[in-house]
Image 1 (cartoon, rainbow, N blue to C red):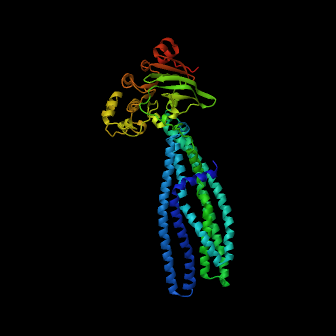
Image 2: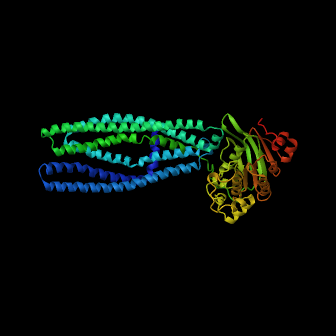
Image 3: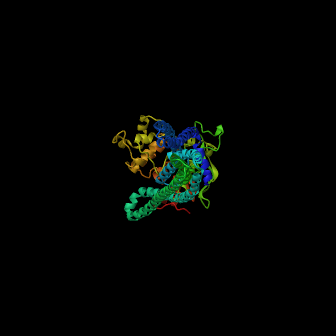
Length: 580
């Protein structure tokens, strides 16, 4: 992404806060104007008061200086009040945009990152971009206004000495340009290293049990040391660069002061300049050099902003789910839902162009039908479910729901018609009731009825009402987590149920309970289930056998058990259906 595009997008980000920025700028201009008067009062105090013994002039102009300072500080407080509010609003807005985008970004994005890396990336980028609203940035703007007045003051006092001041500016420009270039490179290295470490750290924490079981701790510690050393070295170089930048600025300023005092003293000795004049000139020279140094240093100060802004906007540019490809009223899902069927029409899908996962798939599932999908690992079962739930989109063909392309439905309305029990259950760090109720408005009585149906009574009775289940249900067993997921799906009362290996963590009694649910509560529902359990398959209407992503055969469980040796052997646990 080009920097010019980044600057345009940053400007668009701050456009809603134009009124606040205008108020801040007015405060800065007034403050700069007041500060320009201070060297003049100092000159008069020295020349007309101290050197001439005029106490009245000293009292008058010191009082004026005091009043100027008081007004300046009041303006500064006013400015800072608006600036702090602006900073908070911008930070909130950046985080909000990132979060809302995260809720709609295509699921493929999460396959290339983990939560630790994502949290680090968004936090770092938002923090760096919001630095634009730091007090240092607005200080630079104020100094730019002061520079104009300071330059006028210099020319009024002595144009020859003004030339000396102006000659120092190109030198400082070259020095700062070098430091800015170096800092951008180091900041880029630091951001890359931090992102790499966050990704590695998230994977390490997630695989802690495996690390201990396979004796990987020493190896992981070496990786930790290597990645952390990269970050620490980048931070060390940045700190050293900061020190050199400050040192070079101080040396140049002191060198300028030396020349000004030498030349100024010579002019005083020749009666071409007053003592108060040289003090005022030195003050005005600071009004000129400090803004220039600050303006040039703004690139140095904000060297972290551009790399972070590029990464932040690249994240916002990541493709989102299509909420709907039609805006016609006929495409809005209305009650009663799912009156007819869901069907695949010559659907093809691939993650990469050369490796199709589902080639030209066609089948139809009628309302109220129970259909099982079976196939070996990699046969395309999960991909097929993702297509139905619109987490992926077909490369070719369409999937219809009641005869309408599912891409035409508003996505949230469409998904409200589906109840999912995933193979990889995710539970939120709240109570059991909170996890079952999530996304619905149901009474505790309704939840208690569902709890009884899925066999969770004992857990609920032995737990307090506010019992927290931990992050992703860490305080529960695999079977308990699966039952909560089932209860969460049942409470939705959706017309279409998708059960992905729903019995994988259940004991025999719980699996029998699932069979009972298929015959009772789910009797009128359409159910698509991925399983290889014969006791579940015996209760479905049809079985779709996937081979290489295609429905190789469609039939009943009893038919396959009688006529298909590979199917029979796989279901009975003797062998797995191969991908041919």
